[in-house]
Amino acid sequence: MSQIKKSFLRLVKSNESGTVMIWSAVLIPLVLGMGGLTVDVGYAYVCDKELQMSTDAAALAAASGLPTAATAISEGAAFSASPGNLNAYRNLNTPLALTNVKTTVVPGCVTVSGLPECGDAIAANAVQVTQTTTIPTFFIKALAVFGVSSAKSITLQAVSTAVMRGAQRGPYDVAIVLDTTESMTSSDGGTNCNSTKIKCAEQGAEILLAEFSPCLPGESTCGAATNGNVSNAVDEVSLFTFPAQQANTQAGTDEAYDTNSSTSCSGGRGSNPDCPDVIPYPDSTKLGTLTNPPATGSNAYNTLLNEYQVVPLTSNYRSNDASYASGSYPKNPLTVDSSGGSASDPSIVNAVGGNSYFGGTGETGMLAEGGESTFFAGALFTAQQYLAATVRTASTNVIVLLSDGDANGGTMSAPSSQLNSNGTYPSAIDQCQQAISVASAAKAANTKIYVVGYGVANGGCETDGGKLSACSTLRQIASSDATFFVDGSSVKCAGATSVTVNNQTNTLGAIFSAIAGDLTLPRLVPNTIAFTAVKS
Image 1 (tube, rainbow, N blue to C red):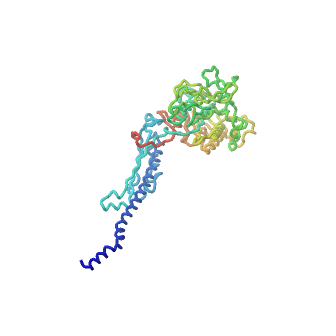
Image 2: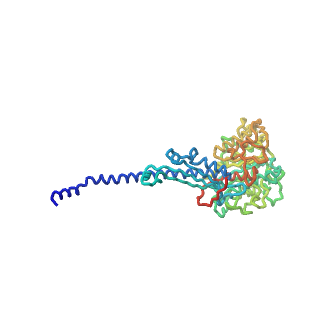
Image 3: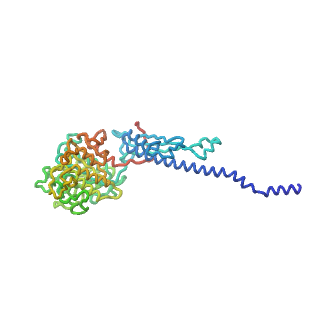
């Protein structure tokens, strides 16, 4: 080979100035492709998370509508990510999306510990929500030129299963306030039970105790109680009554609680110091006012509390979360000696008639002594003060009020100097409005109030000049119409929620079961759980 040709080949071999350009031409599409893939995958990840979150929300909303399948379907759709609904994320419904979110809500039945089973009035106790959508790709769709048509879009799907209320609760601090005026001694007539109205009301309270959780789920025993409360207490329940009773009698030495006693309190206190004595309204000479209540722990506070409270907050009403052991409840509402000593072993179970709801023989329970007409404000005022003073971490305060009458306490016995003349608590006038105002203050402090009207009749509140009816008063005391109920023996009250449980409509049993259910929370469960769809 000539020297000239050798020199040319060496020159070509040694000159690499175009190599970078060649490699750049090869690598730039690869780099851009990787970047594009990252963008597409990141976008898909965000959309998938949004789809799953909206599906979870839709499932929980749907479960809150159970056991009514139609309500569950409508609530699930309303909280879905489908266009125009409450969880319609822009990414999932953007004009670029190839398919807007499609939502399917299917009611069904599952078996979960503590969850009401399907049957009777419960057609479905769970719901499964499925959502699908198809989102576009922005970069990897270029692979379509190589015949990969699926690269143009990505289909996403999310599934969530949720169970109805009844599987998880609280914790709650609950004050049950029962009417024990004279009208509660009359016969129920079989509308709710074959007994007196006070006994029927107490059976309703026992339903709540059967549904509440005394201790953590799954524990075989709640353990020993100290001052009425077990370790790791979940729901604590207290009992109040109105009209007010002489301190340390209604709560402590009322021998009507004791089936082994021959003493009868049906005739009132009389000459028997062990029977309760009703205190005329306004209950105490040191009530304070709605805006300036007696200080917690003060003599005035303790006096008022002792007059209304039958049993303090306790959690010893069942031996464990799942079942009730017959005969295991304490035998006395409060262990008090004959001189009116301090409480040592409170039992709300015995105070509402023993364990009759749980299949036991039961006790006499709290009596309706009468003596004064209905005045809600004092009992609500005291119950709210007590709940606020005994607040627990993460617990929610609840008042459950049952009454069969207007809020007309009648003539106040206290000197006018101890009463307000402007109709605010405590006052002899506008007694219905006082109850509404006291309830409003409690609700403003985040206490949830349920009201059960029992045998409510027509008529207005006399001390309000007839401006407020019994129905209207009870409705305004409740937190909302969803927490306002009247039984079948009552007149029809506007706004009252109708409930059917175990084929019973608007009985006290159905109402108290509905309240217990409302105080539980729907929750998500694994999609692997055995789920049987039902027809809606």
